[in-house]
Length: 86
Image (tube, rainbow, N blue to C red; front, side):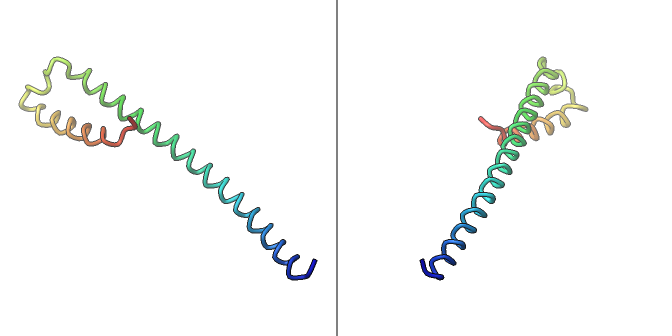
């Protein structure tokens, strides 16, 4: 083996080893973010269910003083529902 071959082999080994650790780190970060997104999706769904439970008889929706606020909360919930995992 020539000196150039040995140098290239060492460089290749370093690149492969560092690539392995970078990929492992990226997979770990990806899994962490997937867990976070899943928890956020569950929280959004729970809020939507609770909102429906609170006003199952449309009492708040019909009330003038609270109705506007409840309509805004429903708009916010609808916007959040777009970010849930289906």
